[in-house]
Image (cartoon, rainbow, N blue to C red; front, top):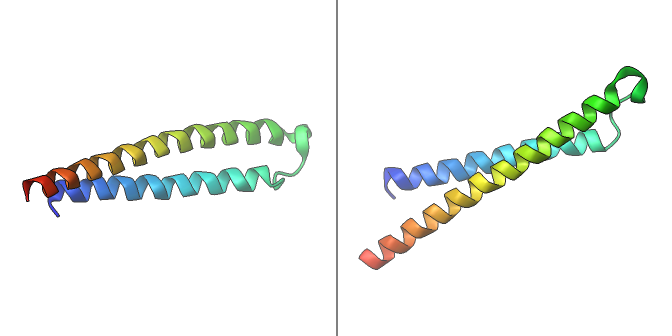
Length: 82
């Protein structure tokens, strides 16, 4: 496995890790762990953070998918080269 192959694997692993972190944050917030409701601004902040997490999860999925596809193409090229 060449240095470039490691880069694809690293990018995929980082994206997957980040995806899990943002999903965990979203799950915590959606689970009703913000106290005080609308009176202390918690609901608005919660909604903003969840929206940010969802957008970042979509971005991390794209990064993961691209890295995976690149690694698969590279592996196929290596197989063809023998």
